[in-house]
Length: 215
Image: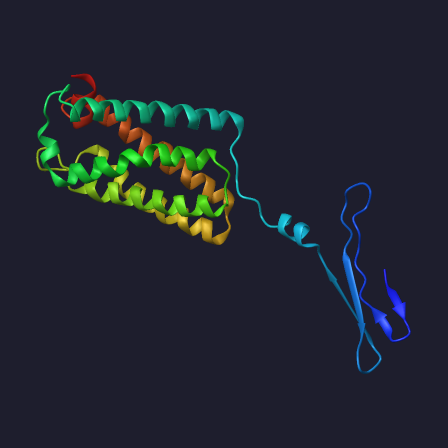
């Protein structure tokens, strides 16, 4: 497509075809040596759509995430409500700074992580909330190092290095544009390093969440 007049060659642009397909924009101009330079550019909306899309979850996985996030959020907040209002017995753990930090950071991490997995990906809001969520996960894992039963580590502390490594990989894959790896890391971090320790903490007798939830 070219438009000519007496002075030489003028730019011309492609139009959208009737079937909805986009035509390339072709621009030509004459150089001082009489040569014609032609450049091809994609329309702005088409160039934007050609960017690598963010990952999404299958309907089955979305159902699992929604169920896990909703159930765990309601259960944990119910336990905290019982503990803070005096319905549940007093627990000495609430006098330890590490446990207070651990609980205060893990509480928002549960619903926020579920929201990030279910909400649209790649938006500025998603990126901002994602950074907050990773910070919460790293903080709660760091606080867990100082929570020790009888002065020693327990098997549940295996999730601490897992959280650190998954958080690093989560950031690295996002920066590299590896959406497949990013999806793998965030699912592992949310379901593995957040949900499993949460269930264990509710099931083990004597732990804070167990006492606040069941007694």
